[in-house]
Image (cartoon, rainbow, N blue to C red; front, top):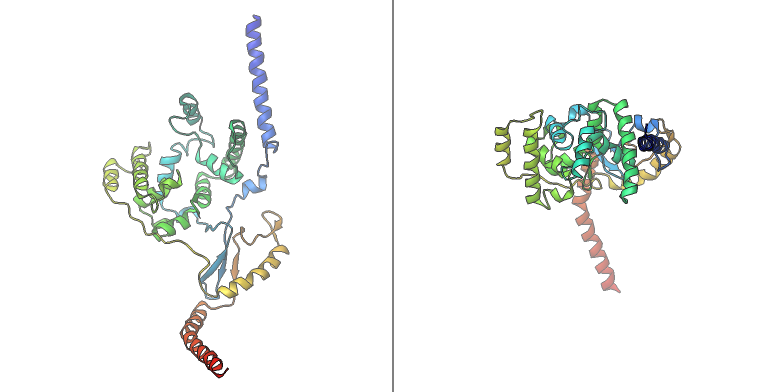
Length: 337
């Protein structure tokens, strides 16, 4: 064997060994904190804690990021099909990393789209990584691959899709349920194909937000519909795609504001008591004290929403009368002085 060939083999094995060491180091957190096995097995998104009245009505929420979790069965197949067709056509064929997509990215230098799978995108959300230079981004990508493989080992494909859609951001709106209710006043299970295409299109960037950028949103919606027809799964026929693309962009936007609702003073006063409870009770999933704003607690109180509503309406009716009497009293005192 010639010296040049021997040198080539040595270089190959040394390089291969370095790559293995980098992956091992990343797995043990040398390049930044990695999720523990417990966190991988319980990768719940930050969920809002809900205050529920004695008669079962939602009174309000406490949250850092307002999320409401839904189950796989509560999501329209239109949303799932649009997501797979647009973001990861081979989702059911890979184990977290799509070698074919990676090869396409390397040979085209990224000009034909990215190579991140849905599982990798979920891993990225879990890691909460920011932007950085090429070297930093390279280490971040390695961490995403490791977490993606662990996710695939611990969850079914349906569970990964559900985790992704519950965690994904639509601008300042988090999770598919809140996005669906904000833009269409519907539960995720009720979304039509063209509505699902609008929401999935927004995942590409907030420049496709339908209220601020209707033209871009319409264009992106139609691209998603086209991809649903062109996907190897043929989620819809080209004829249906053409019909849907001819429709105008229709939304029913209403911003979610959890600060409004009944008994606002009660909810404000309740916070202090709940914080004390959270500090003295541990979440068995994390073995740390509960977080009121992230752990999705269900808080049941004794207030009956119907009686509270009657009381608030009565107060609103009588306040003008009371205010008039107060004004008259103050005016009388001023005149007397």
